[in-house]
Image (cartoon, helix red, strand yellow):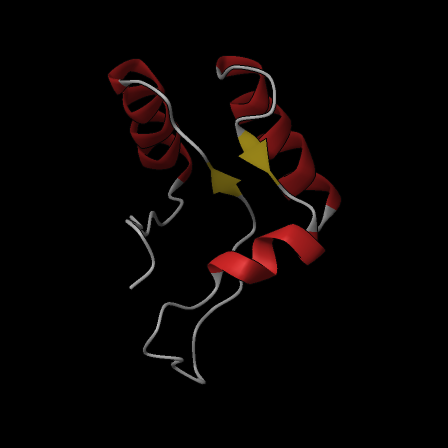
Length: 77
């Protein structure tokens, strides 16, 4: 992840509760795929574990303003 991307993620982190944004590649690896095991699954720059409607709204606003793709995930099945 480049320096500019990290600075941008810092802006998102500041808008959400502590620990809601996961950027550690070791931890985000678990979120890359679901049971389909798609070999072409992308690598997330971050994972957001939203705990409220307000968290989701903040993420969607952030994504819209930065042109960042959002991939919703449920239980991973």
